[in-house]
Length: 48
Length: 242
Image (cartoon, rainbow over all chains, first blue to last red; front, side):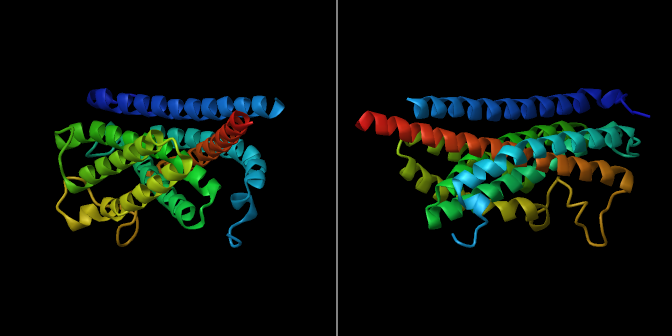
């Protein structure tokens, strides 16, 4: 059974998980966008 | 660097290796993370800490990765400085933003755990302060690299800064033993084995592996980005000369 009721600690538990999820999502998005941007640029320049 | 595996020292082979390894590590991270969250949220509340014990499953892995990423940054910087290896420098540069992210998470989740347990968001004790210093070293490394247009000078200056900052790593690890600290000592590597029951140890272990696999995946993706950036900038420089 999942214990999702954090009771009086909800104000600390859920922000900790939410911030972690957000920062990890930003790290994933940023890494993929960075790699994609420079891959396209490198391929454009190689094609010229 | 004849001793180094070819897929790590040869950019072409690294790109071929990382093309399949990065998504593979990403899938492993997602599966381990889901399993860790399942075990974490099916574990009972702690008799002392209540539901806040679950912050441990994201705080401790983030802290591990904060230090592991810096060890990777310092190791790659050493190889770049001594052997002038471009791929090692790309690996160092790629590790910094990821390490900064994990260190930020360690600080924030620690603060959110500390407030209900210690009664304060922050104290200037040895463990918390040394982790803050680690975060500042990441920021300083990234700022230094961004401020120097010359790639060679930037690599050299960044590597020296990274190696100086590596002195802080043992301070982070042993700060709770060297000084009186509000932060607890190690529960996992305590004498006589882990000082926590398997019901918490299992999700912590799974989340630790998930964070490590996520770092591995994102590190490879960022190194690939660095390799492409350098290729693009080299092509632009050639075009400007001709």
